[in-house]
Length: 396
Image 1 (cartoon, helix red, strand yellow):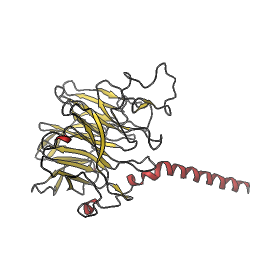
Image 2 (cartoon, one colour):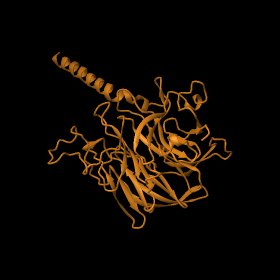
Image 3 (tube, one colour):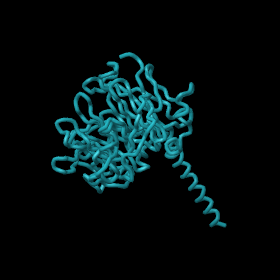
């Protein structure tokens, strides 16, 4: 009888622990992990359309039924190319009749290992898989003659590998973002939790910046030429810490992970060592440039150009918040506008598009952003499987 009582107590305790873990860490994950509870393709043209935009903007579906589209990139032929990691392929979109809807999408590369990052120059296309970066000839709408440039570490918590050519005078160098293998840990592989630099002239792959837990997307500031990147903070410290970040990436800088976050705040929940100096301080560690709401999961970021946009938007930054999972009350699921002056000084953040999580329904999760001169924005959504087309509808 005592054995039975002990078993009942153990079951009750286990259920209590599970309930506490569920409430703290899983309840808020439901919008992230379940299929969409609303059909954005159908609802976007109705009076109950959930997405809310600033006055003067409209939104429509540019492409649909894409699986989990992630990175968008203009290919050598001018078509929008999209990586689809879960399907192991890269596709091209074509709006041949110019009606604002890509009625055709076709595969240009397939049988890849979770492809993510895309880059191109001249007639070469570069695809970052989770374990390598390959160079292709781009001909007749196909990526052919694959040549492996270098290996990358695969596996771990963060699969995405993003690539970008650096601006002049370093245009012969490519940046490669490689996330950590864990939530928070001391990495054994020196290539992880970093942005790496590949030099085409020498064939060397070296560290560019470190202490970056998961900087999935990068963008070049149109005036300064600086590299900006979003950064996802660690989980399991609570609903509101640590902040997610936007950083200005400098060569040789250390952005603090795993022992520092935000404005050089010490993560003493992980780091228990005794230091001779303060473990998080300039010039040893670089603080974040902009702190964002914890667990927003910032991904794509893009700067507004001058051409075809009102002056109030010039050089401002749009950031896609993919949306939380490790938070009691979900946050994110929107695109925000970081207001900046021409020198890149931060003036504040405001919502730009909201409603992907609305009235208990999840319609999608924004990922990447392309901003064109002339008033057009494209946004990928890897939950609803679509690309949105946003238009500025007022005279400039």
